[in-house]
Image 1 (cartoon, rainbow, N blue to C red):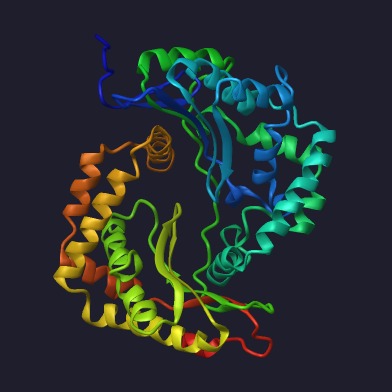
Image 2: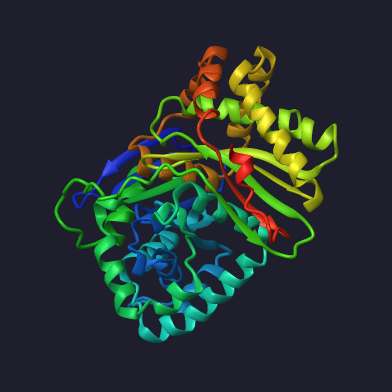
Length: 424
């Protein structure tokens, strides 16, 4: 009879300050291993713009133990998935493998994070790859418009700059600058190891201790000297000869530890989170003005954003913007109905649980929660917090956030418009 591991997350802090969190998932034969580093594009001074993402690429180019080909071969040989991503305030390196291959995943990913060479030749070759990635990103106005919206909200602050960097900033970064960024930022107290799947916590801790030798004595994670972003309101318009206009209209939201974030999530789902949402019904279903329209909220250490995205024909952009403004004003003035709120809560509950059906999603949930919140809440507790949101809570957050000054990012064939009238 196979012994199932106990469910629930567990946490251990190693002597060097490295945190290890695990979540046993019964009934699976896989394991996901991730290293979350509390370093992202927000940590970059202007001359370092793009360094966090550049470094993410370079860590796969070779370590003292393996070159780039060996890294790829050893994971392909066991059918594993190995990847990484960079965000505004953190970077994650992860692997997903069969549970029996977890020791290999721990060894490979930890080796990348702790022992990368950052060789000048690799910097030169990977620079070309990243410049191609920037070109690919720039070819998709549906992606670029979110950068334009962030710039409208935050201006030249690091939160207003694209994570990937720019052509000029990537061409200016040197191997010495990236290597120095790596050595100074990738420290034990700034990292979290998260593992989910058919795993045993104590066994994982032993593997991690072996894979992260030589960590400095325990010390608290230093407070980052992050400058608060400005509370701007404006428009960023990029004139392009596109067939479709892409826009994001929104405002400043809530910081990631604001307890009202659950109420804002319910509001977001009711406004633009699904096919029954107000925006989808009013903009797409009733009037056929856009194929894609939705709202979203995101959170950072000390701020956040709430936005509405739509893609539409350029000659319909004024109608779409007007409808979006009307729905924001209506929600702020009149609130949402109890039925809408109950439906949004049900959608959130289902999305949360169904989104955690695989070990990779569980690994991401516990790793990000420990890194940014300092704790991992059980899924049942998260569901309880969603259920605890009242209609009055939703109406109060709508009255607050949706009355804040608006900003707009827009891309399309608009050579002679600044859209300033949309914000008044």
